[in-house]
Image (spheres, rainbow, N blue to C red):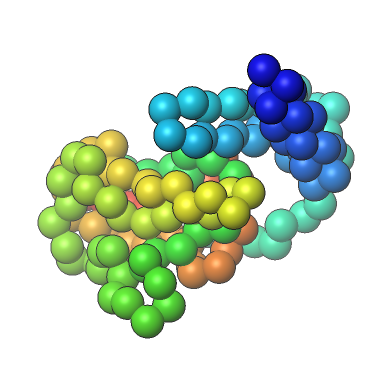
Length: 134
């Protein structure tokens, strides 16, 4: 049980140190998520965010805070490319959080119109990553 408390304390320290609103750790079938009210957090500007209005369709948001990657490794092809038909549950990218690589699965089916995030870009929970058209 002390391992759980240590992980919670570690997550809380990361939350404070980086001015995050939420952080999630998933190991196997266990998951810990910490959140706080956003008005209590002083966040550093993360630079311009891509706007989902740039393309017609449904934006797929980031499920968590972390570093986005659109391919399994630097020397491999991207998971998806504009024009690809995407199905529900298909892996479309990964987000690295606390040295854990979390697969992003598409919540909807459609044709990928645009990739809004770049490899190595830090994303916040809810940031648009992709635009799909039904």
